[in-house]
Image (cartoon, rainbow, N blue to C red; front, side, top):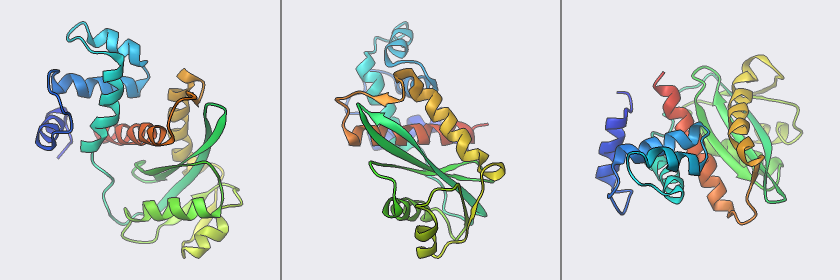
Length: 214
């Protein structure tokens, strides 16, 4: 069964993820989609206020909350997973965003945000995505020196691949960077780390949901 807007509406009503329901649930879902697709908070607010008055802060809340009723990846056998990381900023501080993409379904199995990029981060991230695998898939990586020891420690086969099957994870990061380019790939100075993690997790969940509808 496809996770349609009607199904999402039913889940939101059942789980009561919004404390107030003065605005229609359909508009809240649409606000999250439009913001994910690249409109600024204020532009989404301005557009949707033609139908219902919505503040830009409400749009931000909807984007973060709707992910709570979107489906996590299914646990199943997977042939190969491409993983990689990219650099963003919170204010002037670097952070690393890790992603894992199933090379067959192109589904994002997980994101992980860290302030460092080392063996421990690799182990923590890969462990978090293995819960969606009923087997031990091959892991496709680039030349990062933090991968080999960590993947061997986890008993996983891996292969260094620059292009080809790893293009799916590059495509995910291309979409993410295109989205964060609106604020120069830099979250504001006053952003909390947990809020940034939530923002990126929302991006992943909307990415998977919209891909599943095509």
